Length: 212
Image (cartoon, rainbow, N blue to C red; front, side, top):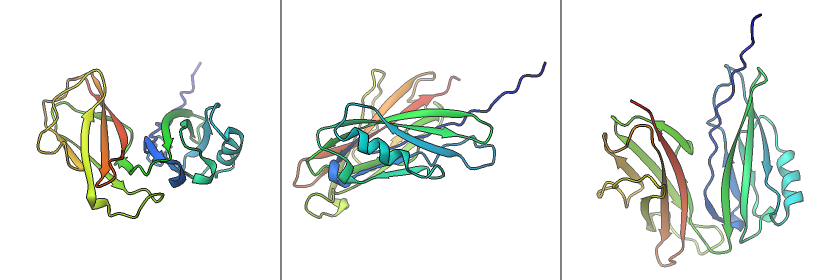
């Protein structure tokens, strides 16, 4: 008897971890893979318990299955909420996989921070790792140039390491080869503060270090 092995999609889901509710939320699963050479399908949901849950869930359910990016307008969001969004990605072979991201909303004009690339990365301990990010001023506050942002990288996981002093306060963080421990998963945060406002936004990324 031959068993059919269904290849499961690999989901890469990203979003800014903290936003001003009126800026809206962008969920990006477009970097997901294992489609077998054919387009992936996407469906979205949100965990119960947040203000406006029914309307928000209805909006998410109507998004096109072909779109790997979900843009949620601020009119569907409320301040002071912790939203837990799930993306389900499917492929032509019937395989499917989920990923979840948490976004906190506020009424403060927090910068919109994004770390480039997927929210979970597999890296090698013996090679340099470079993380890059960006930040934009909230559209809900006074207009400001993003070049006035102050950046800061930190390690928020229990397993930690010393960050490179030259790049930890820039948009791009260098993690030199030999810094990370094989078989360990680290969580790093990029925070950005707009000059003169003192309000910070942040995004996070997980680094899973391969076993040697």
